[in-house]
Amino acid sequence: MTEAISDVSIVALDARGDGVTAMGEAVAGALPGERVRIRDGGERTELVEVLAASSERATPFCPWYGRCGGCATQHMSEALYRDWKRGLVVDALARARVDAEVGPLIDAHGAGRRRATFHARFPHGEPDEVGFMRARSHAIVAIDGCPLFAPALVGALAAARALAGDLRGLAKPLDIGVTATLDGLDVDLRGSGPLGLAEQRKLARTAEALDLARVSNHGAVVIERRQPRVQFGDTLAALPPGGFLQATEAGEAQLAAIAAGALDGARAAADLFCGAGAFALRLARKCEVLAVDSDAASIAALARAASGGRALKPIAAETRDLFRRPLRADELAAFDGALFDPPRAGAEAQAREFAASGLPLVVAVSCNAATFARDARILIDGGFRIGTVAPVDQFRFSPHIEIAAVFTRKRQRKPRGVLR
Ligand SMILES: C[S@@+](CC[C@H](N)C(=O)[O-])C[C@H]1O[C@@H](n2cnc3c(N)ncnc32)[C@H](O)[C@@H]1O
Image (tube, helix red, strand yellow):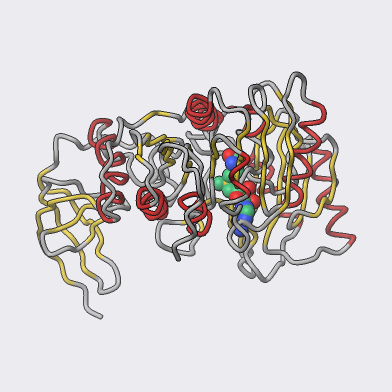
């Protein structure tokens, strides 16, 4: 394929933060209003030079920006970034024909990211590659640090490098998930398959040397030197190996405040897709909670935290696959309100049960604007009114956005039967 060089004008930004030409060609690193020189190599269009820069162009602060795939927008001014990011939610709602007000972008970066997933590869006869993925590629960018990390995550890269070194020679790439907890770094390895005794010993020695709280492999503990705990409101919970945690503490607190505000006055609430209890353990200060998640280890952690928590109302915790067995409309009759925070796929089946139930209040939390909008449409078709949608920015400089919204209606006396 021959490469063509051309000069083009950029007219918009797409959902990844790339500039877009009038012909719909995406150019990473270009901004609306700019004239840029591009190289078109068939599969990918590359920015060669900015010929006339936008006044919204900013200088990236990270030395790996442009190579590392973690950030996509450090070249945007704060104003352009905020507008674009809020716009991701506006556009997704418009596509699903959901008429809702979208509030201003809420900055929830706080002290920074408290978890990260590094990747490691072991090219034959060459040094290990440990870092983040390059944008739109499987190549690894070997970084020395990330300016977005919370102070507690600063040792994570050194830990990832050392643990990857222990498994040098693996044919497959390794994913190294590191979470900063109150008791130190909690590391979960993925991709290696089962480990032999010798490899486990090496990992355990590294955990000792770097004072890591725990190392697990695919959720199975290799060494636990201290139980990694996190604080959900006033309650301490021990995270299960590889368990979910919101990306920033500030993001979690913001989402929890929206949920608690909406559910204030409820006597009983359901927290669906509850993880280890980030919201359930806070809500239980004021109301009884049924907490449901498909991950048995998260449910066990939540139940332990609930039994040790002080001044909490009763929490019932249930392991259940809510995609296959959503909480039914008749089961929802026991609650004054429900909260759901599903993975990126959303919770279509559960949204249909909400719509069919008599429930007067649902709080939706989501990390995917498209599935959020789809599920919002189902709730609205079921008679709910959507409140102001809050875009919560805990993934600063990336195209990811967290969303929260409150849906209300009069309590329905008779469940309506689920529309499928
Ligand atoms: C975005 S996390 C939210 C966790 C929790 N609300 C929090 O903020 O920490 C999504 C949760 O959905 C759970 N999950 C994924 N698929 C599920 C399913 N089919 N049924 C029930 N829970 C599921 C995961 O285990 C995870 O805990």
